[in-house]
Amino acid sequence: MVLETKRLLLREMKPDDYQALFLVLGNPETMWHYPYTFDGQHVKDWIERNIKRYQKDGFGLWAVCLKETGEMIGDCGLTLQNINGTILPEIGYHIRHDCQQKGYASEAAKAVRNWAFRNTEYPTLYSYCKYTNVPSIKTAESIGMHFVCEYPDETNGKTHVSAISRKEWLNEITEIY
Ligand SMILES: CC(C)(COP(=O)(O)OP(=O)(O)OC[C@H]1O[C@@H](n2cnc3c(N)ncnc32)[C@H](O)[C@@H]1OP(=O)(O)O)[C@@H](O)C(=O)NCCC(=O)NCCS
Image (tube, rainbow, N blue to C red; front, side):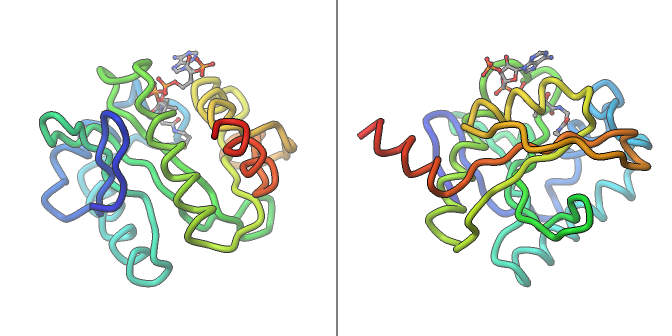
């Protein structure tokens, strides 16, 4: 187990998460913003890539599970991504279609944000997506991120970048406590 929130557990992915993750990433309704639909091999590669990230970087996309049942309903975590030519720490999230709009992505991403600022030295955390991906942009904003830039991109046409700095995060948590 890596992280615990009110309703969720975030833990490392493992190969036998395949079926649960396929229900998330293999659903074209959820993944409309991707240039291709995920098939079984893409999902297996996704899990393998994240297991390698845990070993190499100490973080990756983690399995998002319902605390009550243990069921995996998505992923959320920190990865290093090439954002407009620079490798930057990015918070990513994917939630199964029937579990969306219940606050799970925000809840998981907030825990990842807190973990990242407490356990790494990155001064800023980013989130990026296709410019039309409103749910993703709103999730980024729900964890205190704000618009940074949009840049032309072959995959997305245009990519939208949001970010939160360590200083902004500290201000936010100081206001709470
Ligand atoms: C982006 C995604 C993870 C959001 O998951 P979710 O659990 O539904 O998100 P939440 O319920 O926590 O909502 C987060 C914010 O997004 C908004 N939102 C969620 N779905 C929305 C929708 N379909 N339309 C408009 N706003 C939406 C919520 O209202 C909330 O905003 P608020 O804080 O202003 O109220 C989910 O839509 C998804 O898996 N999309 C496909 C994968 C993806 O695009 N990932 C990110 C880019 S790689």
